[in-house]
Length: 370
Image 1 (cartoon, rainbow, N blue to C red):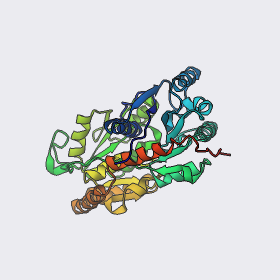
Image 2: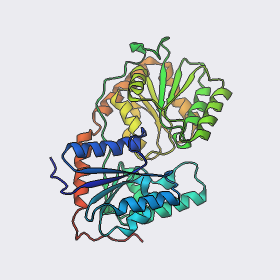
Image 3: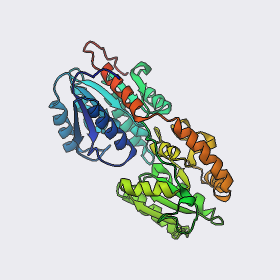
């Protein structure tokens, strides 16, 4: 087991840490895991809309960071960088700073050129004071290097994946499986980056096959996107086949996982893909894209990998998996094998603890990002 970090760890969370998206789950598991290992952990929820904080939110972040004792270890979530950027710059020499970058904010889908440029400038400046930068994948590491962070300062720390019971799917029955129709599950906040609109377009070309789709994830973070998705479902005549659940609790998600036959994740960019990893752990075939780090997580034999943004390719990949139970069963076996090889949370926490410890030495010089 790694040695203790030796001083308190202060975590800067972009809002309440209990939120249910993958990034918050990752941050929360780090906080809980470090505390369980005897580390002293403080969690600071930065107020405001992230990644677009107003002046009041930035001033609040200044005050929160200013109260952290000299020499403390600080782990800041990448989504909180815009709110905390000024405070991190001002206090870089008295605190031991590490960033957890899930994926660069300026690569988010739907940003204007001006918004993307601004976020890139903020991220580049905010990462400058960091002694260590933790990333979940090689793809995200490359994106952080593109921001000017020296590779020697970057550590790849994939999130853990809990071992789970295999999904029963069609054979298991349950409240969502009354008629035995293959159930597709797509899990993720309803935002443009998740590509749900492409999935609706793909499934509109597969109405000759039996299937049912459940979209599970928050529909309140981007109400306009959620409304447009519901309109697309209705416009495609799929209202009887597509269920949009909103955000579910753990029990609700567990029921969905157990009753599903296929996981579909048409994201346009992912820094890792925790939902895809969880699907593999449950032995579910995964149809996803090659965007970001997804090809690092999902092997092709475990389902299919298609170009991001290509509804036609997505439909072509789904057809044999829906039409042929044998093809689906072979993909499920490959998915289970891949899931068994995923890192667990103990390994993840070992790496996080080690990297936070590397940020401690007071004489460590920080090379400025040009």
